Length: 301
Ligand code: PGA
Image 1: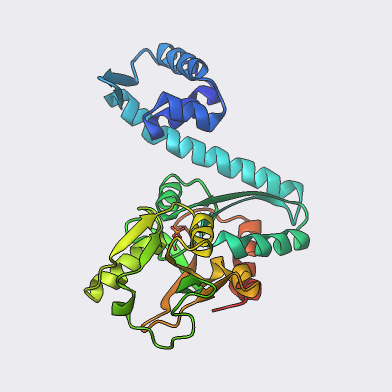
Image 2: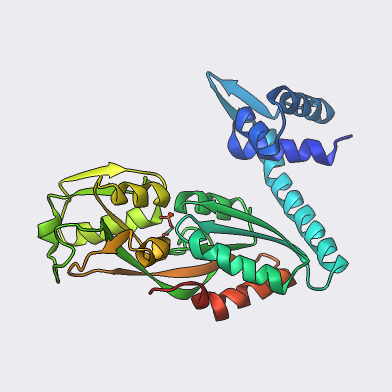
């Protein structure tokens, strides 16, 4: 059987996404290039790996078996690459960090300091919401994850390293700005700018409200913290966000935090990696840095 590592890599990506288009995007290839690699791979093997039913593609039995093996092979190749990088420089190597979109505000400062300490490190920094992080954990796409609640459905090693208070933000001059102990019922008629489905912040807020039997009258959905902050600033409504996403706006007096009963919703930030994953020296150094120095990079909470 005469197959190449590249074919295996392309096959693995198509199998993971069950889409030639998405695989092509992620591998920075054209779709015909991906189709050609798969065609040549199938010819080399002598069996079809995908079947098309309507608009969807599915793995054949042979495809499923090969996908299982290809995941192991690509993980091992990854580890080999990491090991070689490490051997090239004692304090360098490759570090892939995936963080929740809510974390990146302070994580970027933390990373800058870490890189000053380890100037040879090559970093890949990925920012996505909770749903995206769970997918990346599942697919073993990063060394270290910084996120809210660690998943129960994936076997991980997780350690809380800092509090993550969720607060209600309002524009400067909001009628409730000076009020203390605002009741949740008083807020029911306000419009809330909510994060998208798949956001950890949103899930926490929904759980909090359901536990108290409260529903807000109206809400608007926005899929970034940045849009929520701007929306609140220009008076579209109130927002519920991690205090770590609004530190600058609070310091510059562009937003305020309302004093609401039962708030902040107290969550925690976790540092997470897949159980059983080979952790490189630089990843261990990063974990240690987050654990011992993470708090230095936030002003509140
Ligand atoms: P998110 O943050 O709201 O950007 O998904 C993750 C989390 O808070 O769990």
